[in-house]
Amino acid sequence: MEQESPAATRARIFVNAWNLSTPAGLLIAVLGRARIRGGPDGLWLAEGYRLPFPVARAFTVGNVLITPTAFDRLGPDVVAHETAHARQYMRWGWLFGPAYVGAMAWSWLRTGDRAARNHFERGAGLERGGYRDVPLRPCCRRRESVRV
Image (cartoon, rainbow, N blue to C red; front, side, top):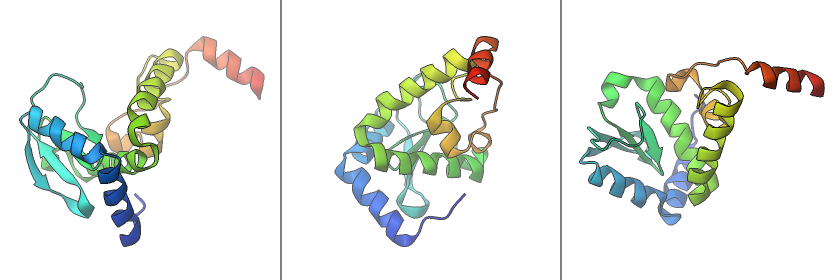
């Protein structure tokens, strides 16, 4: 994972507070009855999330990393992956949610997997997030080979 500079970390903290994604993440964590603690680089770690949605080992809203389990169990790769999503929130703001859902649908249509061709998951590192790369469906492979 590329290390954020201190200035980039401060910018992410400020922008995600200003665009209200971090306050929204904290509210989601509270509603999910997660235990919230400070994490590295201005992140909040919310563990023990109890709501049934979304179905994920971990997810991020603003600078809040949320998991139904504990981040110590998931390991540093998952934290690095979710931190990349916090940077994506800084760039996309409230558009991140709808754009992510669209990217997830696009990936599923092309591969049958919600993450393999999801621009945001690929940008955060598929393997670090516990995802695997899967091949395109046969119909999409033919179409892509025509473009080349």
